[in-house]
Amino acid sequence: MNGPVSVEVLRQHLIDPEICIRCNTCEETCPIDAITHDDNNYVVKADVCNGCMACVPPCPTGAIDNWRTVLKADAYSIDEQFTWDVLPEQNTMAVPAEEAAAASVSDDGSADADGIEVDTVRGAVVPPWSAAKPYVNLYTHKAPTTATVVGNYRLTDSATSSDIHHIVLDFGAMPFPVLEGQSIGILPPGAAADGRVHHARQYSIASPRDGERPGYNNVSLTVKRVSQQHGDAIDGVCSNYLCDLKKGDVVTVIGPFGSTFLMPNHPNSHLLMICTGTGSAPMRAMTEYRRRKRLKGATGKLMLFFGARTKEELPYFGPLTNLPKDFIDTTLAFSRTPGQPKRYVQDAMRERAADVANLLKDDNTYIYVCGLKGMEDGVLQALKDIVEQHQLDWEALWAKLKREGRLHLETY
Image (cartoon, rainbow, N blue to C red; front, side, top):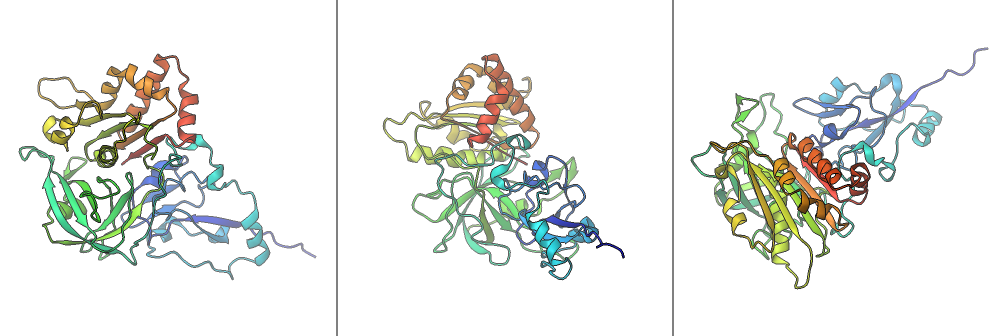
């Protein structure tokens, strides 16, 4: 008589296409390249994913934290996942009850969020200890809200090709609480060539928690018009839509998103902010909140490294240069100034190595990096060089910064 047939069961990791805002955070975070995407969906490769959970905490919407128990032989393929508009329900008939129960409790190499090894990601997956509690996913693709445009201003010189706008959206009586460092999703009207409605595009909030205009229920965004990608002419669907908005226009919004890239609330904390271009949005929000809430006797310092191609392409150039020097220590870096050598934020950091090192030695210092993905390696290398130049252990400090929620990376 034959014995029982062994059935391999898999707790398959899936991404909810209804909640996902296609921000690419999960794919960038995954240490084993188990996540990929097409023009429609982000998906997880069942034969590669080891359940390490490194992608779960950084996901701003929670779309990544979905699982289905399936027979391993019947795992959903990536081609099948690419076609989904909604997640499939758990099929309780597909897996024998005993095997399903075993899969739910077995040690398959996965870990909950509290058990993530700090070395699987480059930045913190926890917020600063004193950060305010964020609201997340109040409005979704299925149930979005709307906001009215009350301002749309070009920030960069009209003579440059870099068209960056400061856009103010008012939510009226609709609750939309946000914190500095969070983002929202904008749903542009219309559909793609295949007939599918456009996905939401994510934008960091550039205003503090009490609004662009204090006491009003509004937020501001920093948006660059996309007219080229990888050297090819291309009109960015959402960026062009937003940059062309007029006062009084109504936009569809989801969110807010983000639960870790948040500023500390205690006034004696120091903020080391490093950004390029529209990566200035969360830095502006944090700086403006601190400016409005300056407390007598507070010792918290602000230090900013801000990069752009030229002075004319730097958003918020005027307001930045007019801020009091005793409030914020700003160093600008321009990479395409005619007649000058290329200078990037990491070069500026090295020039100010002694001051940066003093901040890094202080346990009250929080580091925020935002901008194009290409800057991340250079900034981390500069931090490493500065730390080692001042006889500190970079690996130990890096692990500590991540563990304590003091190194936050948001690059795209």
